[in-house]
Length: 239
Figure 1 (cartoon, helix red, strand yellow):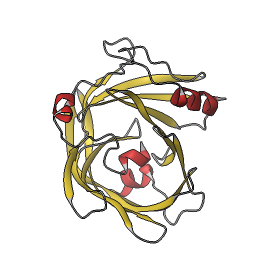
Figure 2 (cartoon, rainbow, N blue to C red; figure 1 turned 45 degrees about the vertical axis):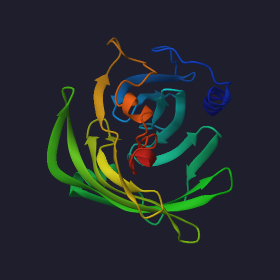
Figure 3 (cartoon, one colour; figure 1 turned 90 degrees about the vertical axis):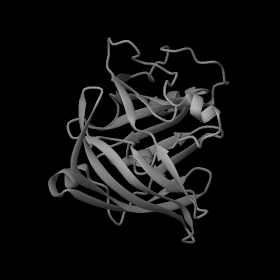
């Protein structure tokens, strides 16, 4: 039922989305809203029907919701949905090296190597690592640990689809990754700067909770800068 509700929300006719009126699917509860750079706001939520530790994220730009993603208790991406057109992407059950939030915290580095399949028939693989830099940052009163990330995504023929490198942030207790500053190559060999860092963390009862309109960098994007709808991986896969 939860997946049906999510798909219903995604394929509903496009209409203007008013600020602060988003509702999570039935049986789910939003626990945090994050306003980020690059004109994105995300609502993080948990669903009672999911395995313990699973978390969802719904991403919104100025036009509305464009991305849903689920991670497990290890911060490992499990499934996601992109819109226009609607495509579901899932983690392959057999993996060369599963992502592990626990390993990252325990040893300071976590490598990963896995495949993903989409319901449009395409498939790809992602390989890379997260490494703690030993630095911390405080954003909107929340202390986060900085990571270094480097990854490559290839198709089934081994062709590079995209690469990314840079920094991200984690919150050990929330077991969440947040995008940060870096650069990405969309398969054409050109590295482009990207920064989807969080700016505000908003909790139930606070102004801006359940917000659906992003606040930061939107004027820059409208002037022609590259959007960061899908943040630097593995944030887009693990969050």
